[in-house]
Amino acid sequence: MRESLLHTPEGVRDIYNQECARKLLLQENLQKLLEQYGYHAIQTPTFEFFDIFGREIGTTPSKDLYKFFDREGNTLVLRPDITPSVARAVTKYFAQEDMPIRLWYQGNTFINNSSYQGRLKESAQLGAELVGDASVEADAEILALVVQSLLTAGLTRFQVSVGHVDFLKGLAEEAHLSGETMEELTELISNKNFFGVEELVAPLPMDESLKRLFSRLGQMYNDSGELAPCLELAEGYPVLAGAIRHLQELYDTCRLYQVENYISMELGIISSYRYYTGIIFAGYTFGSGEAIVKGGRYDDLLPYFGKNAPSIGFAVAVDQLLAALSRQKIAVSAPEPASLVVYDLSRKEEAIAYAREQRSLGRKLMLTGKKADRSRADYEAYAQRFDCVETVFFDVDPV
Image (tube, rainbow, N blue to C red; front, side, top):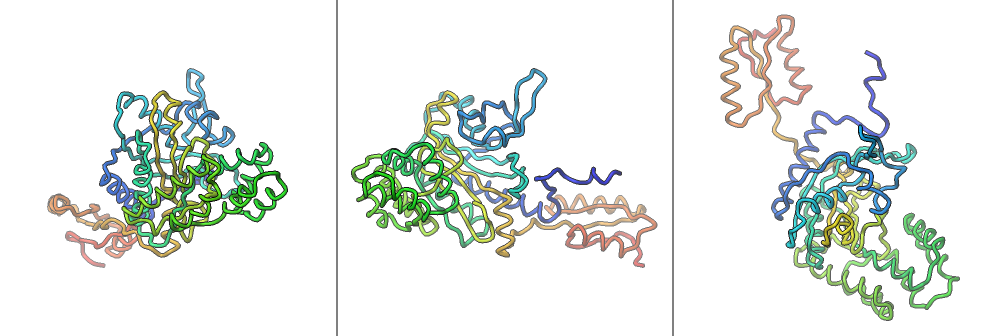
C-alpha cells in the first residue's frame, strides 16, 4: 500500500480508541443537559448552497470556504458554521410557529484556514439555539446553559466574557469614526491592544466622555454595579446606555441561575460573525489558547431566510474543550470497557450463549474464536491494546 494513502490531509485528523470514547461520552453528557432544558435535536446537512453562508449572512469569508459544484452547476459549500443552517431549517419547518423554539445540534464544521494558523480545518461543535424570544431572560437562559455545559464537562476554572454588539457599534457611530479607523480599531481590539486603542482615539475630535468609554473597552466587570460609571458616561448616548443597561439586567438575571461567578462583562468583545445583533460572549479556560464556547444574539438572521423571529444561541468547540480538559488533567470518564471472550471452536455454542446472556445484562463483550497459532498471552495482550477490562477463555489451554 502506498504510504501517502495512510495520511490525512492537512488540518484534519483521526480520532480513535479512548480519545474517541471520551469525546463521544462528553457529547452525550452535554446532550442530556440540553434536553433537561427542553431543547430538541436537529440535524442539518454537512453541505449547503453557497448563499446560506454568503457575504450577506456575515459568517465566514468566501476564501475560507470549501466550495464545489453539484451536477446542475450549483455552488455548494461544506458548512463553516451550523447556526445559519439551523436558521434556514427553522424558517422552512417552523414558519408558522409563534412561540419559542429550542433546538440543539452536533456536527462538524469546515473552514479552510491558512496553514500557518495551526488550526484544525474540521472541528466538532455542539450547540443550542433559542428562537422566538427576544427577552433578557432568554439571554440569561443561554448563558446559564453555557456555564452548566462547561461544568458538566468537568471544568471548574473558566470564565464567560459577555459584551454587547451595540456598545462598540454605537461608540464608533457617536465618535464618527471612518471606515479605515474602524478597521484599525477592530484589529487592535482583536489583539487585546487596548493601549493602542487609547492612542488611536486620543487625537480624534470627540467628547471626552466618549474617549473615556473607549478606555473602558479592555476592562472586565464582575458585577452589574461595576458598570454604573460607564452608564453615567453613556447617559447622553441612548444606544450605548441601552447596551449597558441590558448587560446589567442580564447579569442580575444570571444570579437567579446561580452562575454569575462564572460570568464577567467586557465592553470590548467583538466577533468575526457579522450577523450578531445583541449580546455576544466567549468562554475561556486554562490550557486552551482559543475560546471553548462562543455565541450571541442574532435577531436579523432568520428574517434573511423569511421568518421574523429573534434568536440567540451558542456552540461548544468540542475538540478545544477536550484538549483543555486533558491539559488540566481532568478526566472524562470513558464508557465501561468491554471484556474479551476467547473460545475454542469446540465450545462455540457455549461461548456465544454466554455472550448473549452478558450483553442482555448490559455488559460489553468482544467475542473471538481462538486461532491455533495464537497463545493465551497473545489474546491478553490484544485485550490490553483495546482497553478490555478482562479476558474470559472457553477451553483455551494456557501456554
